[in-house]
Length: 200
Image 1: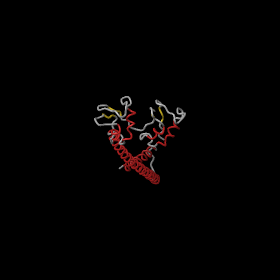
Image 2 (image 1 turned 90 degrees about the horizontal axis):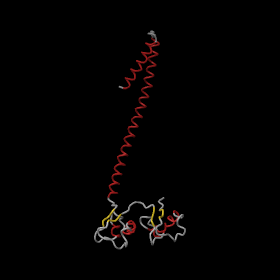
Image 3 (image 1 turned 135 degrees about the horizontal axis):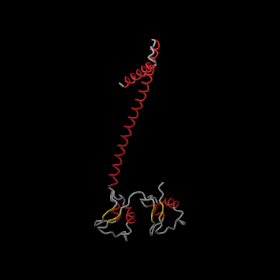
Image 4 (image 1 turned 45 degrees about the vertical axis):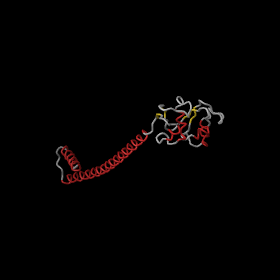
C-alpha cells in the first residue's frame, strides 16, 4: 500500500512538472523517458523503504530485548529487596539471649563469632558484653565496614581477623598501609582512632 502511494506521488509530481512546462505536448519519446525516470525513482524509493523497514524491525527487536532485560532486572531487584528486608536493623533481647547466640541467628550474621560487631554498635547500652537484658533493643549493623573505631583492647591483627572486616588476621598490613598518616607504630593504636578499612 505504501509503495502504491509513493508511486502515485511520483507520477503526480512528474505530471505536474510536465503540465508546468506551458502545457507543452510531449513526444512519445519524451513521455517514455519520463516514465522510465519515474520507474527508476520508484525502484530507488522502494529500495529505501525496504532498507528502512529492516532497520525498523531491527530496532523493534532490540527494544523488545531491552524491555525483557529491564523486566528481568526489576525482578532481581525485587528479590534482593525482599532478601534484604529479612535482615533486621534492630533486635529486641529476650530471656536466654547472649551476644554470640544473637549473632548466630540466620538473619543476624549466621555466625556466633561476629558477636563483637553487635557489642561495638551498642556500647552506649552494653557495658559488659557478658550481660545483656530482656527488652533491650540492640542495633544490628549490616553491610561492608569502611571505617572502624578503635576501642580498648584492639590491635591491627585482631581487627583484620574480625569476620566482618577481612576474616584474616594476616591482612592487618592492609589496614596499616591505609592509615600510615595516623599509625606511626603498627603495634600502637589507640581507643578513639577511626581507621580506614580498604575494600579494593
